[in-house]
Image (cartoon, rainbow, N blue to C red; front, side, top):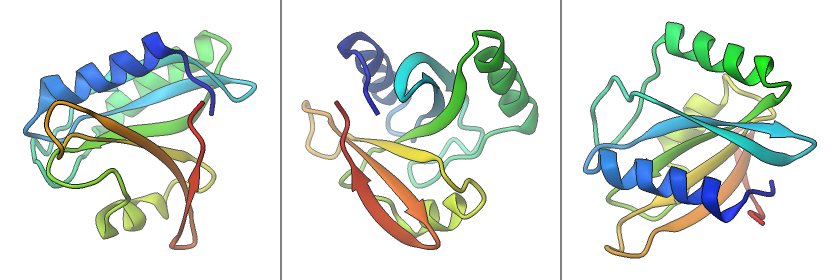
Length: 130
């Protein structure tokens, strides 16, 4: 995925704003390029996992579609660990085949670390964020 510094900064700011809980949201793409960021509320309000209400999911998918984009990236944060998919993330990803998982790691303090992954059939593969 390619993403502008401004859109990536929006995601990192969302992660910092929601800390110590995980944040979550979606990125709208067009031809593999990030076009829009869509934060949603983590209704679990937890530092260890996130949940998204179905009406929020429908709203975001409609926004992305109305903007002539395509969904394809779910983002969330890890506030206490490195930005690598947890077993909870891997289990959750089984319901979202083909989606990219962008994770913002805040465990190191001031510097956010951002990584992205494809998770398919329980296998995690890092993909570049450009």
